[in-house]
Amino acid sequence: MTIIKFPNNFKWGVATAAYQIEGAVKEGGRGQSIWDTFAHTPGNVLNGDNGDVACDSYHRYEEDVQIMKDLGVGIYRFSVSWPRIFPNGVGEVNQEGLDYYHRLVDELIENGIEPMCTLYHWDLPQALQDQGGWENRETVEAFANYAETMFKAFNGKIKLWLTINEPWCVSFLSNYIGAHAPGKKDLSAAVNISHHLLLAHGKAVNKFRQCNIEGEIGFAPNVTWVEPYSRNQEDVDASQRAIGWMADWFLDPIFKGTYPSYMVDLFEENNADVPIMDGDMDIIRDSVDFIGINYYEANVGRFNSEAGLLQLEDVDMGYKKTDIGWFIEPEGFYKILTYIADRYGNIPIYITENGICVNDGVEAGEVKDARRIDYLKGHITSVNRSLQSGVNLKGYITWSLLDNFEWAEGYSKRFGLVHVNYRSLERTKKDSFYWYKKVAENGWFSV
Ligand SMILES: CCOCCOc1ccc(-c2cn(C[C@@H]3NC[C@@H](O)[C@H]3O)nn2)cc1
Image 1 (cartoon, rainbow, N blue to C red):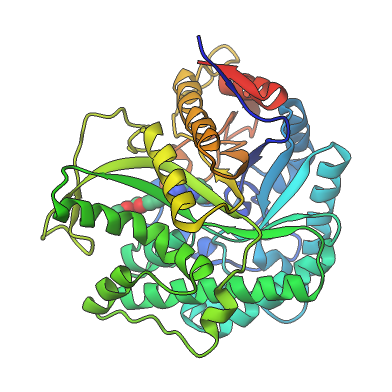
Image 2: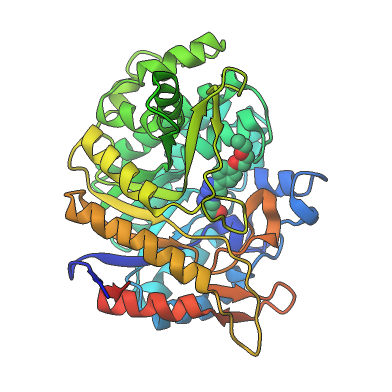
């Protein structure tokens, strides 16, 4: 038996996002978001699911905070629904929206849980999308205004801030692949959006610093690891393109002040140019106190000239898969974390998402999700190995507290430590909840 032990100051947390858990989409003065539009458009979400009710956490947040208190975590990472604060994206602030998040944050603090706030977790106000959304450079200013409003309203209460969650999903998954809202399939638009997201992040951080807001700020790219199938240069280069698309593309501008040239070339070869204007890269560079890293899966990649933008195909090596079809490969977590540390240096990192989709149900009042416990053991062991290797890891936040609306997969895919019955909205703590509780309380576990 091996003991995996973390430093006493290492933080443990759990994460959710507004559109995935809140519901109450027409309450409290909330405006419409692009996910309300996308989910209510037939064919976009499995089984026609939407976030109208979700986990009803808008009304049940006190119960959810008590569950987190029992879990023993130090951090709760949640997101704010921008259209609750600015129903039309800009203009008059909706005080009811601010009041809701004050209730939530006060409840967390009263129960000894530190709030980590993500400002943008994909639910763009529809009114801004109607003006071009993230493709429109004016949305950058709208985001900076929204961010400043939140910073000032919660200064001293919230001390850990994230601007944008998974910019690759917001830009490329949602506007090139088209699997998420708004469901566009235009590489040039997606590259354009990726730059505007970084610019919006940089402008928000400028506001954070100009207003002398207490605490730290970062953003949370999602990353993957792709192991080359062979040492052939074509396989190595193709695998690097997949890693760079999610990591380098969003982290190089912040830590190097430039986009990775091999990806700029790839996009230009596909008629997609980055719309950089004078001064943009100065706004983006050095604009974080820490970064959040979201990791779920790794792949093995092989060059295939016919295989899409990256000319890369996945090779099925027989790894175990999750119930959403992603490969389970904890080694990839260690590899991408050490890759990031090697490329950018000793930057403070929180793991802001890591978790597994397994759809175990309730039987006799219990959920025996042994596969989730195995996944967490393997991946948190990789986090510990990365920490031992010198990666400046500050904490681990698992996705997710609750089963919730998993975007285009709807409610068919369960990531929670807590099972949610979507008819009764009853919460049931899974076996993994009790395993993670011991880790959060003790800071160690055995494998
Ligand atoms: C090549 C074609 O691909 C089509 C689908 O491609 C993807 C890629 C990535 C995802 C994805 C989903 N999640 C989990 C979420 N992270 C944020 C939080 O809200 C969780 O719900 N992370 N990545 C989905 C779909």
